[in-house]
Length: 188
Image 1 (cartoon, rainbow, N blue to C red):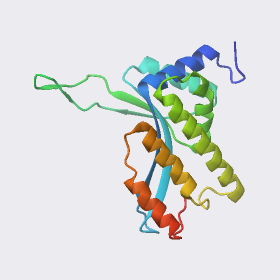
Image 2: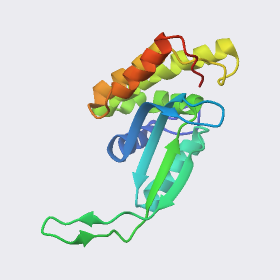
Image 3: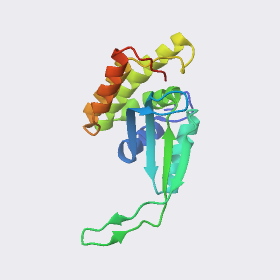
Image 4: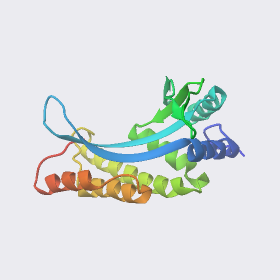
């Protein structure tokens, strides 16, 4: 059964499985310094796939291209890993990373694979889709993503994501929320 983008359900489901097993879904916030302001909060969405097998990466990129997603690719040497009995193990193969981070493109990818995610990444994808839909709607109202202010609702999504993954700390987010509540302007 083919879908309108020229891929079949098996390819989309395979890509979802690769992302579920060899990928990461991230929704994060931080303060970033730049030349115009001492603090410039940023919320980022990323979907990544990591693998040392170039054939798997090639197939992922082929499927992504079929659905009009053109990801960023990066190759890097792997850091040595410690062995249990001492010493180090260094993989010979570099790790290749596929990254999708543009909001509208990440939304398209997540909506495409969402029906085929079943593990812990399914709940993460659901939360990210809700964030992206509301964020893109806000940007549409303002007309420019740089003028679209972050608000407590945006940071709330990130806080929920951190709680869901049990990996991030919310103290930095609490600081950003406090600044926002005190009326300091925050831009994307």
